[in-house]
Length: 274
Image (cartoon, rainbow, N blue to C red; front, side):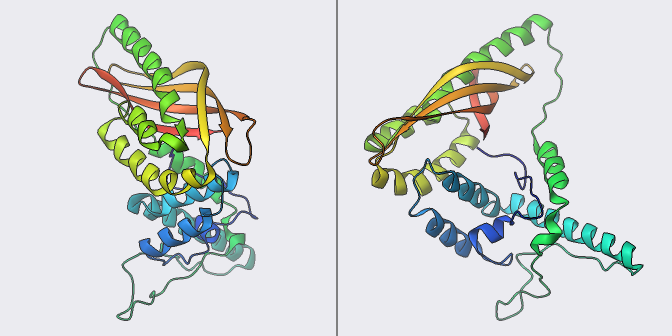
């Protein structure tokens, strides 16, 4: 459900996450949270805009990811400025990343500047690089081929089993849906999942009456080790709600990060794309 710091490839016409939520880069966490909730209040969970606004909130409400994203914006601005200066033969002035603590005594941002949308062109490359660098890595272990093979097979089977309850829910039985999912999650990912579930699903699903049923089409191993594995799962997700009684089915890929905890393979992260 989450990727790298910005988790977004942009083009010159693509707004930043701040633009999407209509907040200033100096906005507080409370302001961002309020803007996010207002933005999704009238959206069905199956609406693509719902998913994109949630992606923006995931980045901007996470201190580390927001700092990395702000650094990307600053780097993009400086790169664009360097290009302009090269063409005009002018010196380049450094652009500092926005610092949430950098405020004057009355709470106004000191020295901040909003990055113009035209300067975000180079973020496509920067975001992909940061996203790749943020993927978890695990150390190679002295395990035999047979041990790794057995671990890989177990991780893949566990991922296929876990994906169904984690990506499914019933608005009429949200607590049961939540309990069915969390038993497959590591403690750290469970915390992230429950924040999303309580902040989004519990507030919106009952109003829309949404029911989502996921099913696994196929899967494959991306990377594996003795205690960690990355599994690519192709999923069909059928959705109904009060306005649409006939199910709408979408197919997408889910990269499931698996970790072995006390002998059990549990989900430690998920990234989805259509």
